[in-house]
Each structure stands twice: as structure tokens, then as C-alpha cells.
Length: 87
Image 1 (spheres, helix red, strand yellow):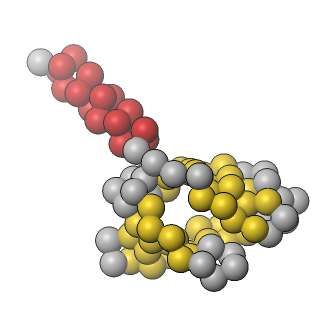
Image 2 (tube, one colour):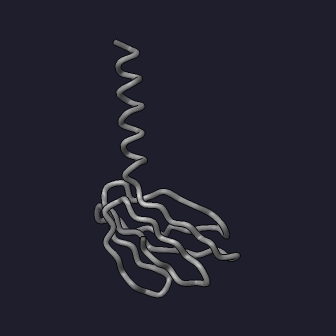
């Protein structure tokens, strides 16, 4: 039974990470995006060259230029030259 629960927990963790959005900062300076998820707003700071997974259950993001996008959790945000693109 213990092995089953460990396997189930690993499966759930893998499924959650597969459904996370990703933010990639390709710039040489830090960038910040605002994330609103479940009614809570927070800043997501990305160091130069950093990649972060976030937004596992859908969220809204405010990009560096002020544009707001709705994410389902499977998108990638790439920031390059100060411009963010959702893919």
C-alpha cells in the first residue's frame, strides 16, 4: 500500500508540473511580471537568463509592457529585449 501511495503522489506531482506555465527571461537584466491566481496577486521576478514554472491551474499575468493575458497553465512566456510574448 505504501508503494502505491508513493507512486500516486509522484504521478500527481508529474501531472501538476506538466500543466504549469513557464516564464523565460532571455534578457541580461531582471524582469518582473504580475501574476493573479486564485484571487491573489503577486510579483514573479525573473533574474537574467532564469526560467520559472508557475500558474498550475490557470491565472492572469500582467506583462512588462502592461498587457494582460489569461493563461491556462500550458503556455510559455518568453521575455527578450524587454518584450514578452506568450507562446
